Image: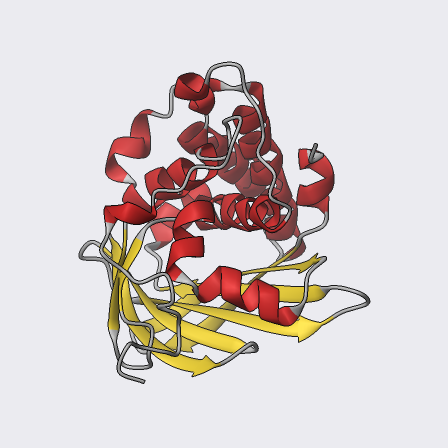
Length: 254
């Protein structure tokens, strides 16, 4: 059984600034290793049937320039792809300015390192209230789900329907929020700023989580993780009519 605290501690987190087409953005970066080959990790990240098992159902083509849409109000286009090494996605949530998500793979010591960087133009009032955690916790959930998928493992709860209230989920959200608070402090934020961000972010992801109704990406990332709060992995691949061989960087016409 996966030790959630240990897996969260395995993630390196950074906060930065980067220019993207939408403007000057704030970035959150996560890096962790997986005990699998680069080819296996790449397939889990880009094979639509596998993506639907550990993340969200997806439709569209994976070739550069093509559009895609994830369940949960996230859509965009594939910007760049270097098979088994890197891909960049335009990441659009509702009518917000387009963000950018880049995933890089590299070789580690007996493992494959995955680095995920999410850059977005963020309203400063929103950043002051939530800091990096509003985005970062969602990606922590995703990277943990990928770990579980690669190990063919699920986090078991006695009541899958109440998974969002389970100790596993609420504990993960709280630990992840604090981890992003540590990254925020390392970036120069004051103790008061860190406390505000951690408390507000934890409230987004833990019961009663009333703000989920207006945060589609957070709700979607939570739903993806909750698929693992069952006795066997869920396989919702039939939600969209995608071939199991559709991958980022390829299409049926290629």
